[in-house]
Each structure stands twice: as structure tokens, then as C-alpha cells.
Length: 261
Image (cartoon, rainbow, N blue to C red; front, side):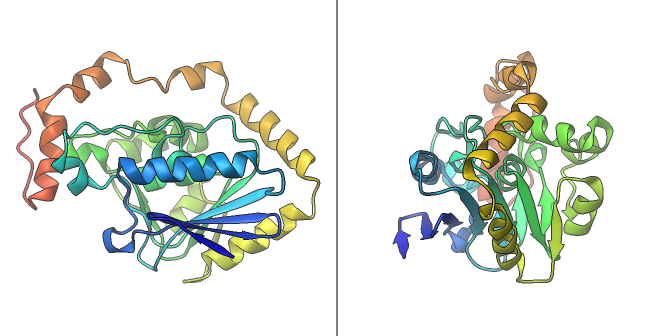
């Protein structure tokens, strides 16, 4: 039975939870209010002993999530905030030991890509596209992208994505190593359910122990320390005019006027 919320839907099928970002009119981009709602959803999943595995996907066929809702950001102060769990309530939720699968059914841009990288498996539609285009709009992929991607595929290849904002196909993502499996068009959720079914044949305690040991070994203390945004260049970016200009230019459908200040 589906539980309807304002910015997402939640379905529970036995021990499986399916979370769908439900803003297809803006390609499932999210603002702070959407992040807060999803943060509460993941809190519920984390605390529910009867829910063992989750899938996160996006409504419609066009996008998993295109990240920050820049038009919404331009209407407010322009300085993006996130709840404790990060983008979509999940990108920086480091204490969730239950497996989460990303069923990427289209564009996964910015925070959407970071959300996928935060998941344990990425099942991508063959038409899916991934990118971290934040520098093109005066931002940086600080909700996990600059940390997760180098860990997943190595620094040189990651920097080729991070410093250009270029788009990466599902097939290239598989070859690089951040995509678990590529599916036929429109089949990412179905295949994600198949992977979840295999997981649900396992002991939920064993799944949690496996994820905790693997992630806490890979993402050690130094990795976690890299998430606070107090690096000098990051602090300067957040206080800059360029940080405000990027979302404003996007909302006004014009090229940004970078001032390097």
C-alpha cells in the first residue's frame, strides 16, 4: 500500500521499501523542503525493524533526479541548506546499515548523481545519464560527489567528470565502475526489485553487518572528515557572488556572468 507525501511516495512490499521522488514536473529536482521530507522517510526506514532493503527511484521516465531545484534556490537566499541526511535525506546518511539500491531511470545530475553514489547498488536504465555539472552554475558537488566519485573510480577519472561537468552514459558508468548493472529502457526498477529479492533471501542481520563492515572500512575517518565544508576554497565559494549568480542565471535562462568574486 502506497503512502502519499508531498514530494515523494513510499511503498512497502513485505520487507522491501520503495521510495520514489515525485516531482516529475521539475525532473525530480529537490529543494530544502523536499530534502526534509525525504530525510524523515529515511529515518522511518532506518528505524523500522520490518524493513530490510530499500530502492530509491524517480517518478516518470525522464529523470531519476536532476539535483538541486535551482529555480527554487534562486527565489530564496541562494545559499542551499541540507538536512542531516544530505541531499534527498540520504547522500550523507553514514549510519544507515540497511542496503539501498538506486534504480536510475533517466537523468541523474548533481545531487541526483550524489544520491545514486550514496546507494549500495546502482541499477541504471540504458538511457540514463550521470553528471556533476555544479561548476557550470557556480556551485560544487559538496553533497557527496567530490568525495564518493574518486573513491568509486579513482581520482584521475573522477576529476575528468568533476572538473568538466560532462555527461556520462550508463554504459560508461558501468565500465568506470560506479554502475552495478545496465538494463533495457524502462526496466531499471524491475531489475532493482530482482536484486532486492536476492538480498531478501539473506539474513537481514548479515546484510547489515556486511554493509557496515564494508562501508566503514572503505569510508574511514579521514573520508568522513572531508564532508564539512570548511575548506578555504569551499568557504570562499559559498560566500561569493558567483555562488549566487549561477542559480540566478539558470532561473533566468541566460549565461552566467562570472566575476571570480
